[in-house]
Length: 141
Image (cartoon, rainbow, N blue to C red; front, top):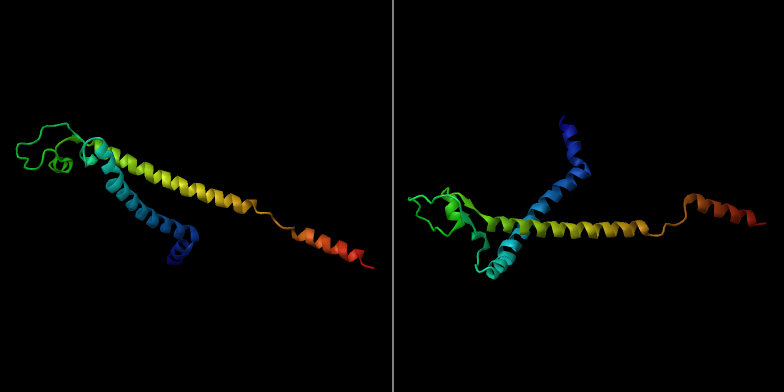
């Protein structure tokens, strides 16, 4: 069973998938930083606030024992207050759209490069070459 497992892991597709998952996770971190640290502050500034993730609606009462900042989404959520974090949701959607667009661009570029490789002019086949050689040999006296 161990040898079968080694053979399974050694297959190219499994290794390619493992590399893709690792690179994808790293790329998701970069995209999250791009969204959280660059794009969303600009969007938040346009809408009148610097931290767009702090746009929320309180759905339930804030406990009297709450000592945190009532304008902080993270503090209210940590305290168990029912909040509708629409700003955080919009941030996640923008993050997804950026990631999906970049993946689309990568797939599109890969598809174009594969088409170019397929469109490369093919040389004559072995049969064609052998036929030409035979015909040339027949022409000789």
